[in-house]
Picture (cartoon, rainbow, N blue to C red):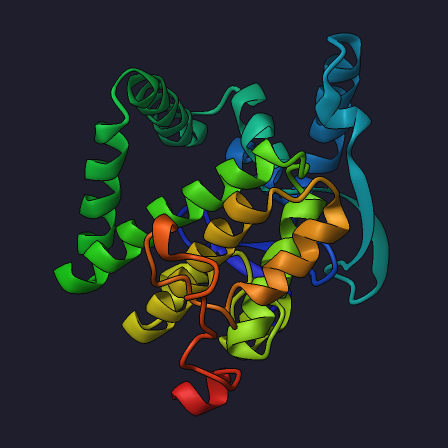
Length: 270
């Protein structure tokens, strides 16, 4: 894996990818050096860090250190920032080179505020983004539908007391494993992804299978009304294996197992 990525007009910044946390970390000194053209970016960062501490900035408080290779070939402990921290750092540096990113952050913030008043704007922007990336309209429609299905599922989980974050991730792993044979982490590795969105790299068929699993999980949860996390976990496993094809009035004696009896492995899909 590359230990450097190109940022700021193709200048290389030392980086580290954390497989466990699934995060990129960037050398703060390298970023400061590029933004300021300072002959001694280490000193510049020391002064800036001292000012940020006085201001009570969490950027410095939560700053991590990793051993990174220096120009002399040796490894030294280096202050690093994840993506969120990096963007906050850029906002604190008075530099013409940082202005385009500051303007971009301001624009994104304004767009998010607009979307809270009119959610349809978010959908339109998502479509434009996918089109620019070269996705077909058929795939985009499938992807947007998958977002709707996912939202219904997460709303149901919240109603059942499932906590966002780790518990959502565990249940998602159960669903993904059932139809693909992989946890989401191993599925990302299979597709050679890091921070990229896994669903954005699914085929139409994979999206359909995932939607089926999530939609049936939502349906089962609404009927069984689980009250504990373990009950939600069992239902997440069942979602792929049982399809609810009948209206509520027909459920019960007419309930049937899904016609797909075997797990549909990713390796079989391809």
